[in-house]
Image: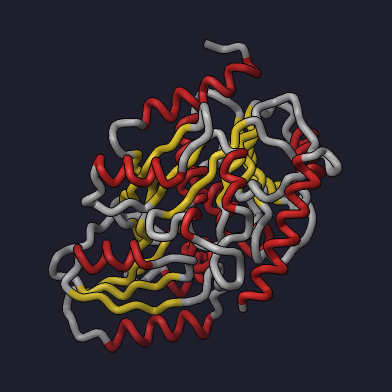
Length: 344
């Protein structure tokens, strides 16, 4: 596959050169645009990072998000409302809308077109978060946050399809903030220094490190919480890019676990649900439970009548910023926003 990677890389290099030299021009807007992205395909934790910011801004600013709406069944711009489904806007935007009903959640493949439409629909918007838009260079964000996974650092990667890179490694220089995500529990200061040296941040660039923090699972329909017990047998059902950290967490906290894996962003059918239920019934333990992710839950909730009686629980996840640097990150973000708003 190396020749295809070299061809793909050449195309990306030429495209970036045209933008860097202003032969292709990115549009700007006079309000805070925060871009969350990565340099590779796969799960680096972009959605939990968007949610981290939404929690940070709650009660402070009128916020909106714009996503592409990956694998949705519609095209063009759309603004989420009470009748919207994950099929119409995609699973991650639907997750944002359900968890943050006060946030304007929009989708649109062309962000330069989506931003004006969103501002027309929500004229009081003060901050826009662009989800997975770092490679979408037709729009220029004021604050770029790039995520790279601890076990698959962009510094050690190569272009698709040989590797996972969808952008040049040197593109990290365009970011103001870099996050190394999904660090292991035994991550040390020495590990921190080693990776910082490897990434070699440019002047003024901030690097933070996170671990994934899992919350208490809640039932998919009635939201009653239930902790995973050491005596439980767990059937893990998920369709996400990188389920390994989740598998490790379940394995550490349950007696036994089985998994029922699907492709990333899989659209569940009634046959899938029957397969899941059949596998669960075959589990012999008295204490057993089905666990899924929040991303998968928004694609399963359409079967509300069928799943209401199933012990199907959703496991929330969020970023935990290591080395007590959470406030430092917040200061970086709020300082950026205040350059537009004039707030202290």
